[in-house]
Every structure is written in structure tokens, then in C-alpha cells.
Image 1 (cartoon, rainbow, N blue to C red):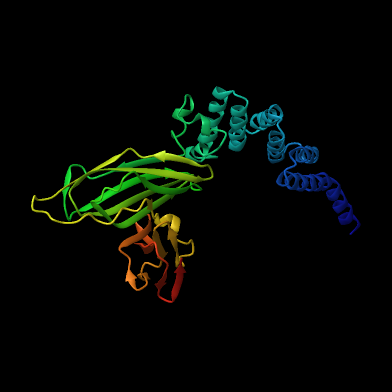
Image 2: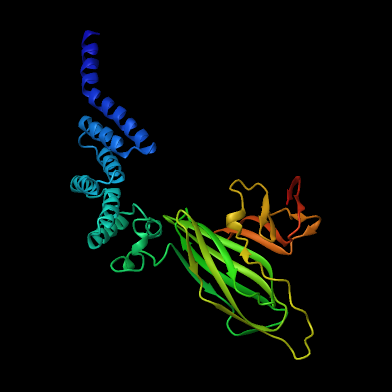
Length: 344
């Protein structure tokens, strides 16, 4: 028993510095969260005295000193971590960001290349980082990162289609997982296309989220329409990406006597942005549109009317949620199964 007590006493003496380091670490985290970076840096420096070889503590101190404006100290701390731990991807990434702030772009690009190679971030995640956003599309970052915070490619039917035909316009969108997107149409309404459905199929990977959005329309009158769309990125940074104009040519017999269709909505209801994470029914208004998203085996109604625009969310080709949208500027009650919602 005496021997055991002696061993425990020795262990306590050895662990005491680590206990102190943990206490200082917690003080540093709290100070940083409260917007006191200088105090946080002092706490992390004190923690490192109890655990001087910890790369985690060194990077926390570096982060605090960067927040306090001491970028040179931050860079030095990150360099120390890289020397001791060449595979510490976060150290490479952070040093790249701090070197960007210092105006040392070539060194920053080299560090970022190594960080991406180590997989600490994806190119799409780095593209929405405020430190690297100004460098998008410029050398030497053009070969490392996408030209913008979101990559967009759009397609329209080649050649002419005839009145009454289906018309599909698709968008391929790739961005970081956290990016929130809005798809909008601008310019004059073509007057010859009726929106009947929006299908979004998403695929998630390491550090990216790819979406294929298909607008399913019906050609209702002859026209040569130029469609203008833009993708708005609202989080974590705000920017707008213009989509190259899309040409849709609708032909009809000379005897055609139809009327123009209802206007295409300016705000496209994206199922991925509307569906709830738990699959429960949700609904609301998107300017002149009223929408509802929920279970794929229940069809929503608005004041008893079925949805003229079908919405569907897929994940890797499998339907995850479905619903509909109505062009209705007036208030009304949405219903699906036992769920209902009054939309003003």
C-alpha cells in the first residue's frame, strides 16, 4: 500500500504540468471566444510551458496571436510545428493563410498546395476562405483552387424544340458542403416556357458537395428565348456567380394560335434548400411562389389544389424528399397527410 501511494504521488507530480496546461488551454479558448485574443495568446503560451511539444497548443497560440495582429509570431509558431510534424496539414494551411495576409503570395501558395495534398481542406473549402478568396483565378492559385467559390455549368437543349415539347435546362453546381445557394433568373420573361418541375440530385464527397439541378419546363408558345440565371452564394461568404446565357428556341406551325404561358418564377425553388433535415413537412413562401417539401409518398395541396410545379430532392439518384410549388401571391393553407400550414 505504501509503495502504491508513493507511485500515485509520483504520477501526480508528473501530471501536474499537464493539468495546468489543460486549465490554461480552457482559459485561452474562452478568451478567444469572448474576443480577447491577446489574453488568449497569453493563456495558450502558459499552457505550452506545461506541454511544450504539443502542436495543438502551438497552433492555438498562433491563432490567437494572428487574431491579435501579430502575424509574424503566428507564422513562426506554425513553422515550428511544421518542422517537428511535417504531416500537420492544419499548420501548413494556417501558415498559408497568414502568409497571404502578409502579402507573401508565392510562399502562401506553396503552403496551400501542401495542405491540400495532405487533405486538411478541399479546394472548394479553401475557395470560400476569406484569406484566399481575393486570389481566386490568379497565379499561382489558379492551378490550386476553382476560379470562384462555386463552380457552375449549365446546359440547354441544342437546336429547336416544338410547342408542347418538354424542355430541360440543367445546372451542375460544385461547392464546399457548407455553402448555401440560391438560383435566380433575371431579365424579361420569355413568355413561352412553363415551369413544371425542379429536380435536384446531390452527391457529397470529402470537402465538396455536387448538385445537379434540372428545370423541367413545357414549351407553350413559339419564341427564341435567352435565359439569364445567376447563382447567389449567401454563406459563409456572399457573392454572385453569373451563368452564361442559355438559348431556347421553340418553333410552332404557322397555324398555331396558343397563348403565352404564365411567367417563369424569378426565384427557382431549390429542393435541397427547402427540404428539412429530418424529412418532416415544411413549407413557406419564396416571393410569388408558395412551396411545400416533405415525404415523397404524400402529395401536398394548396387550398385543395395540386402543385403545378413538382419538387424532388435526390441523393445519389435516390429520392429523399418531394413536394411542390404554386405561383400564388395570395395567402393559403398547405396540407399533406396530417400536416397543415397557413402561408401568408
